[in-house]
Image (tube, rainbow, N blue to C red; front, side, top):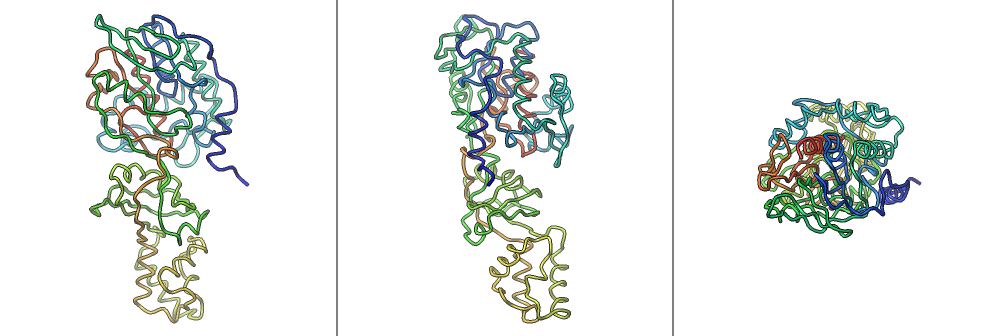
Length: 434
């Protein structure tokens, strides 16, 4: 039996050794740049800042860096995507994509891939425009990026949780950790959001940013499975669908459409398509409706005609046998039951029942009020308002010398390496200007 995602992630977090860091090292007393958080954004920020000759302290609360990198993609690390330019920016939505334009075009997926491969980790393209390490090991990517930061000169301090970041009256900052204070001319906040609390995510960066003058867009879970209260559907757990999903807001207006794999679970719906729309559900605080076209390649008129033809040519067969063959058998049986035509023959299928069945197949509607929450979310939607950060440098518009990057910002994208790409790209800009 395959391990549950929870057990798999726990095993990944327990495996391996801390990479290129000394858990016993106290933070240096004085540096040029203090980077808070050694995830994807923080690691690249530290590497880029150190590569400019800056004295850099990379402060990480955990005793190991990059825990979210380690468990991403089921331990395989979907590093980035093959999309670029306008197609890449569109994945983050109109406003967020426009704000990210400089970061993504100055460090596109091809540049990230070239960097990682130059560090000794071969990459390969897989389905849905995804890029993974050939080894299938997220640990290889993490080790390479950590090693790169350290070789550039960053001092990695593990097990050093930051408790306060304060601006000094004479300029610069005092970064207070549980292991001592570190004074820095510049600070890069790369603390991440609230997703995957098992990796130590607590949203502490929001408080640090608030103390330095920043606001906050309400953080909500994103890229999380959806909770659906429909026992007939959850009884089909394990069924995978090739469906087109459209999320309708509380006012019934379409919010987002996705056609990507969907997995029925004992709690609702998972897989790329449902997880992609989960941030919208949470952003609207529920009251949404998920409309599923279960046979997107078959127009409703064609499906209706198929059922009519079936009544003429094989009237004694059960209705379920004339539904599109790409629908799993268990789902066909369940749909017929929901339409009230279970155990009915094609010849006995009346026009009103036929219309009801076609509507179910082409527009099954499910009420959705929430995802499974931060504990199951891959990223956080919300965070530091983008209007408060310079998109070309990641510098704070509120506090000179402060830089913000990665998941801490109000930026998120769909499944497919887009969130790592944004984290690395914004982290790089912070490191080049801090």
